[in-house]
Length: 360
Image (tube, rainbow, N blue to C red; front, side):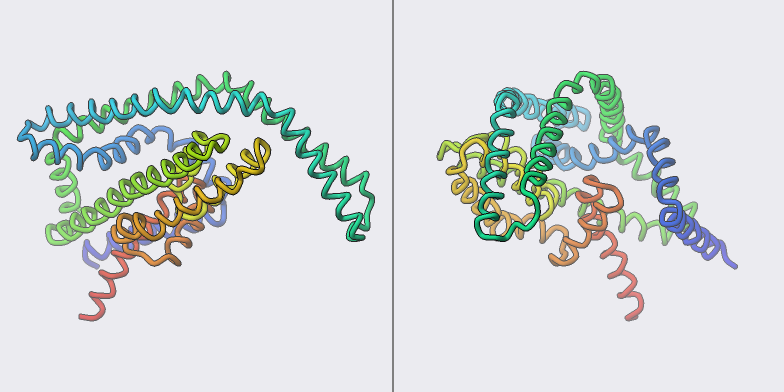
């Protein structure tokens, strides 16, 4: 057996073992993954930061004929400035909305109990309710009280998460520093990967592997940038319409729906439902404007911006997009939902390559 075939069988064997372990010992697999992935977190951050910033670095480097290190520093300053300005504008508004929401929790609880009572009375009047309404009312009220207490407790426990966030930010800044080093000397790292692939697969196969990784990088990069642009537009349109119509919680609803739109289909639905509840308990008559804002934003996403930016870059039909979100979410939660689409796009590259090989 040749070296190439031996390595191929070894790689397939490792993949099969990992897949089998995942499905047979799911909890143990997740526990091991959660325990040891922390050591690689800065490197993972560095990988995605590099992909995210590389197009900007290349653009500045070519447009202004800058040296690489100056282009990288300029990119970091520009991105940091945009982030800080966004935080300075958005965070105070979000904080204000959250304080108002927290203060209104008792009133919202009373309104929910009132609507529940009206619903039970309506069902009794129509002879639809056949079980004891007192037990139902008590169960609903208990559920509301417990959840309101949970929300209040969650707000009070935020202090204890400071240490965790400190560790997370430390890992992020380490990843940022690693990304800085990679961007400055990316040709070296590309050459290093090419040499590794040459040792493992041979010179010819290494070129094909590098080509596949480059296409995968473009898919991932275009998808991330595409979703950021689309989601920013969706969030801004939602906020603008709610702000003009004086609908409550315009800022927080726009941010939620914009962030939710980062996860195709599923995220928008969840964020929209939360926004509906917030507006319904603050001013039910404004729900018509919230519905109008969400509808216009989703039409712009689905018919104007989305197909041009996201669908064309990933090149997948809606069925596969939804399937990738569901599978990614079931395996890795919200992160899997977001990255499920580009991963399926990479699998499509493999599928097309194998199909082309068979047709020969």
